[in-house]
Length: 116
Picture (cartoon, rainbow, N blue to C red):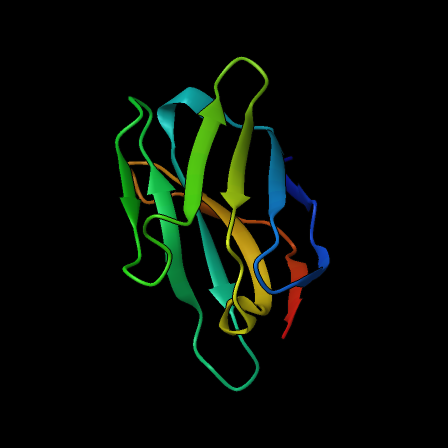
């Protein structure tokens, strides 16, 4: 059974930092591109950042320079370090894992709320 379990969300003031974690089980983690997506109220889910098995990263323009994605292939965990948080970062954050053969898995989501 594949499981992606996020943790680390919460309430933070603007300018603060949060670190999200996503523990993955049931797949060969090192073979997957993993990433973070977010969905704000009444908006579509959007890409935040991805990281390949080799460590190549990709970020949405809105978070470049503020967020850092990383992964630990031994611990089968991905992370999202979020600094200089803004109210517009408020959303439910989802972790995601996908491979070259079309398998895609999602976590249940964790709420991040940034107050002004």
